[in-house]
Length: 83
Image 1: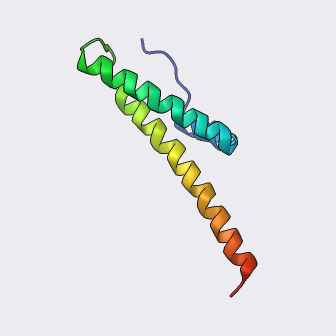
Image 2: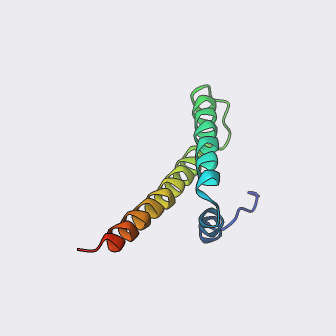
């Protein structure tokens, strides 16, 4: 039986609660994990082949949250300057 994992919406809530620095660290960790998974996949040591997709989606989620924050800051700055 597969191990229980957190639901995607719970993972998103956890990621959104993190600071920008923590997200950057998390992204670096996810990239290192993705590299390891790809290496294991290419050497046929990986038993769970869906792991690569899971890590890729985690990277995409982190990047999406970072971009949302970047856009929020840009819009807030534009509103302060006015027309």
